[in-house]
Image (tube, rainbow, N blue to C red; front, side, top):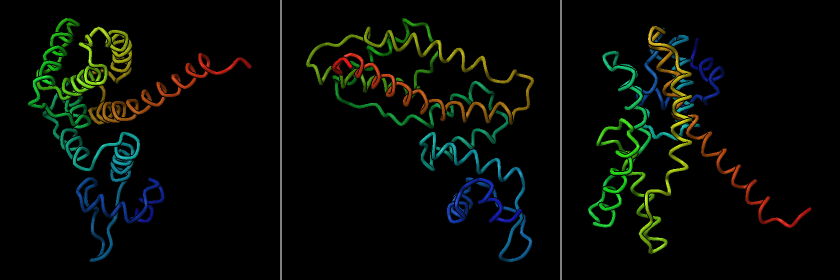
Length: 211
């Protein structure tokens, strides 16, 4: 197929397709002349994946490159691949502020108490520490990590269901890879949207006048 076909079938404008090609997010096509190239179904699938990661998952170009590099490396086991995708999505750096460091220590202790198997350098640890630090700064009180308990229970249940829905270990790697990457990026956005909608509903039920 030509680049115009690639654009039409993926829904990605031609200038954007060319940009993704220049950035290496989509591999180059087979040259048929100095100014034209032919593309395959694999190019179309890659373009659709990139579109979902950027437009729905909200990943940056740099993050998508990291994800695609992990996807292409067949030596990476599936658990490690999932970890790489998660880490690409979370950009939370540690701070030198002592109060933030205390929040991070408290988060680490809380996660240890949950018994979850999480790498010490997981960026989401910093993200959760930022939340706790922000709550403490806002309230001026020593907010405890117990406030995360309802969310942790829901998150654990959701995660178990999501991982259980993945193809089995004997499935083609490409199939597992697509479901892992799209699942993490897309359903993260879906969870956020549904929570916002549910809170709007709950707020209306509690504070709106009857009728």
